[in-house]
Image (cartoon, rainbow, N blue to C red; front, top):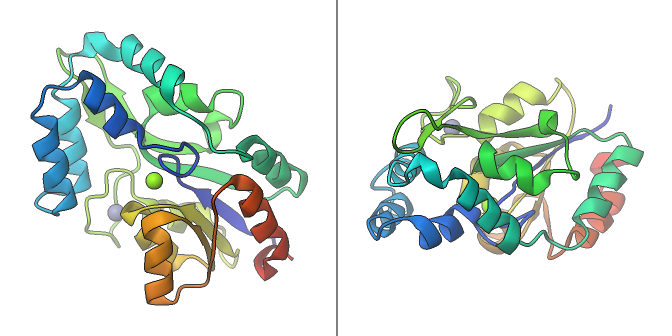
Length: 218
Ligand code: MG
Ligand code: ZN
């Protein structure tokens, strides 16, 4: 049976965090206190992200998308990595705490929408309202917003090996459930600390090498 790959978006596929970048560019200064609350776990990710986007008028939608298309950088080797998974017929899912109105355009031509699981947004009011099509299942009480462990439970067929690729705290719960983790930055330190089976990466060429060497895909 083929393994299933779950790959984070912000800071993993892109070099930087897109929510932080767009808040810096478009939000009033209050956004920083909300970000600090999320990091201090004074509120959940779901509450914090919802509050941050509620600071932004819906009229900014196109400007935000154009800004990110202009400034966001995709990590080296990503399209080769997608081609590699296609050749080997390894299912690849993108699991992201980002929002569809910018995640889809940034991945356009690289990954089909059907493989992308992220948050969504409602632009019918004065300010942006985030909606949560992939909220936590009954096994997760973290109010993740887009719940990666829930998606792993839902999308990986029974008995299939799972591989998580990511960089941050929001990938940790899924990483703990995975058979193998490919990690950078904070997630890498956590994998070392908790002795989770893992490989470090910098580019997606490293990810391809890690997959070729991994017993999980043999
Ligand atoms: Mg990330
Ligand atoms: Zn959750």
